[in-house]
Length: 342
Image 1 (tube, one colour):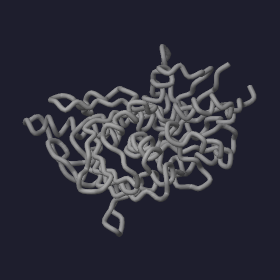
Image 2: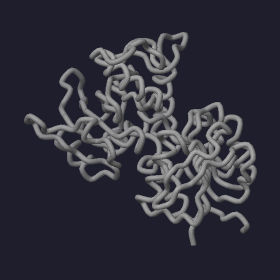
Image 3: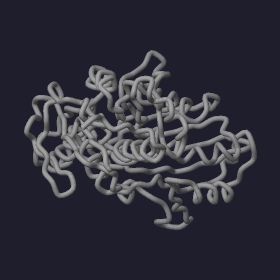
Image 4: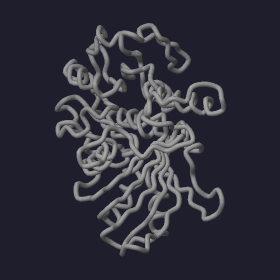
């Protein structure tokens, strides 16, 4: 017997990916509902071999579903997730609204699956930031082996992390530079085509951005509050796929061969690491895939126990939609999902 599932934000990039991944992973769905804001009522989205028309968030009866996959942004989530949770279904929220709420588990199933047990306090489970999700999947098995002291991360984040508007802007600007339109920035503060932007999110008083703060706060919550982490987030002219240059300092010895072997045996990780041309992963190759890919594993000789990694993943999948479906699978496998009355 399957579940009744509502996808809120079904017309967005991540909402559409959620629909696709539910089908790909054969998650047990009896009924599925596409839900969106009033302006999207009637827009059609695909699920398996069916076409669904979007229903109105304001009038939808959430008490009739078992799982709600939320991907409509923080403002919508703050307004609706707790109300929906009180109506009965578990809410798996892709926004940042509840990630640091102590009553809400923040989950990456390969990293901290046992934390899911506490979700009934608000009936909400938070999905981490896309760049954090892939990072902690790579860090977890290494932390278990040698205990991480400090991490330095530089991200190279694709425009799809800024939604459809970000993807459209890269496409339009690329054409415009060749004389086919207007290259004036609209979504981003500066030109993104053939450029990189060293700011993602809003500036905080300390000079970091909220995107950078999400990464260190979420890593501490899911993995270990004692890990020190500093981040620079950069937007790059790539459509799909986030990349990260990761420098790790450990408390205990661990060499590059040990790390390579550990990561090869770790859930959700694929190691592609040959010291030759093409022996590494790029975002183009990771797009559409489920795994977190790790390449360029090498010793950092400037500290006593240090390693460098290159980590790449599809941000719309593992960074968002796939992780949400994996949380639903985790709830299903542990018998934690309750079905609403018919």
